[in-house]
Length: 93
Figure (cartoon, rainbow, N blue to C red):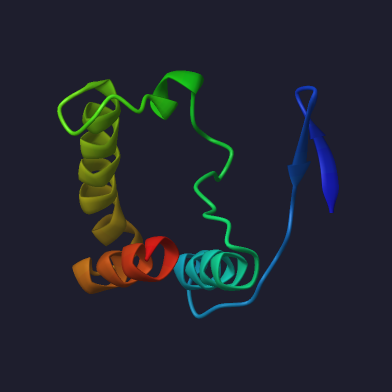
């Protein structure tokens, strides 16, 4: 479903999966395989997080922070480290 998100076009979709991360990862894999597009947005980022200034810049700090947050919060939600690694491999590779 197409939605207005603060003046931008947004998509809302629902997909079944054993867990939310499974559904999101599979959607990312499918879009990448069928359309060559890498889905990297769940609609919660800020513009500064798009910095592409190398492995030691602001963008790297954001990646590190997000990964640390996932490592800390994931298990509290019932995800294992293996669940998180599987998600990254499926969604990004």
